[in-house]
Length: 266
Ligand SMILES: [Zn+2]
Image (tube, rainbow, N blue to C red; front, side, top):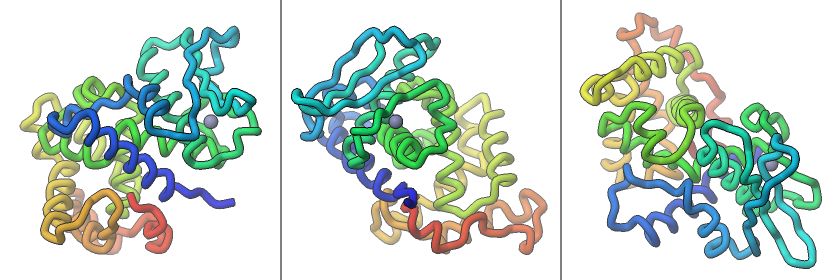
């Protein structure tokens, strides 16, 4: 079975759109914060979910799971999880469990979320993680925040997500949308993380890339959530990185084959 990240991202974007229209239509995009409202979203918007319960589990390592029985589909979340960033963890876990339901994963298998959540190798776990990460922090939200000069800590505070999630979102976007290689991604991320002020953030390679990309999309009057401009995005990345990083053209290779990238709208 193959990963269906595209589907996970599309669904997450769909729910985040509903959330934005229903609850945050008056607020600017950089104040998007779905993290604390996921139980309401699950109950009201996901028809396949009958209830969300916050329970104290005896096993503190289990963050949550989903069950189907006579009462329908219930998501159970451990409210006594033992983490310093308690609310952030609960938000991610709930997003993950909603992901299993909306992605039609076989709930008959017991989906426990353990502390090695982020390293999950299992296909359904990865898809559920992708759904959760994209629901909590959609591309257009962190794009907007970065263009406004937000540091990682400010994005984390605004959206109620972990620094790790933000780094992963930036990494996957640079890889999938722009075809940038890991070593360049490390460089770009390091430069961004070293910024102390908004003005520095706005001058980073990362923000310059995103700025050009957003302009490209608006020129084409396209949504930047689903559509891919891989060739153009790769060209933008090439223009910005070439020279600045001292790489020659032949050094700059596409990380994933284009067909693989086309299957990922991200
Ligand atoms: Zn899971």
